[in-house]
Length: 239
Image 1 (cartoon, helix red, strand yellow):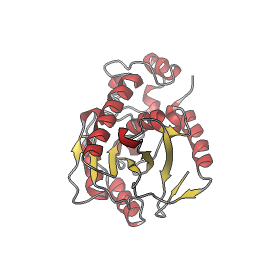
Image 2 (tube, one colour):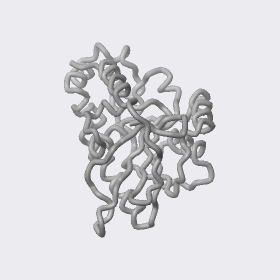
Image 3 (cartoon, rainbow, N blue to C red):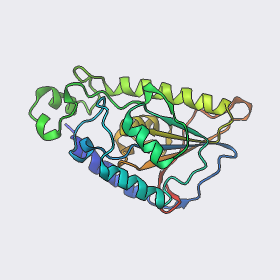
């Protein structure tokens, strides 16, 4: 079985590979700039718990971290559409990094429902047969009283596609999504270049990724894959 922690170490290696060359943030004149930001840290995140359906607020550390990121220019984008998961940790994050912008909430962008794993840590779960089976499946199996990764991915991608279509129809050129780690991984596994596995797109609280979706003539936004770059606090991004 591949543990969650091992996948984190693999993701760290991918992050190092990503830091090869810098690129300037585009203004979306020839497409749509999509920014994906994971919500700030909560008490559950501090304790390394599985938090999905639990509606936790940000903790003090998370609030301070977001404010620092904003001062460093991490969220310096000309946002004209703000879309959020309805969970309060996402709404609070959006208010801190994009003040004055009215968010549009989409239930489909919520985090995975961790069912019987909800609110528990690896140490609390590691001897549970159901948890061992879930790890053995690569985190893809249906969680008792919760959902599978495929179920979460399906609803998340439907919500993402719907919101992009609406934003395009309204003439938006820079759309900010404030969502969850699982939501971001699902979206990037489907749309990002270079193509990578789900867990390679893990991102820390308050951090994020940028996608530049090109226009495809009169057909609107291209539905295919496009380059994904990590947001950087220097005011730029890195591939």
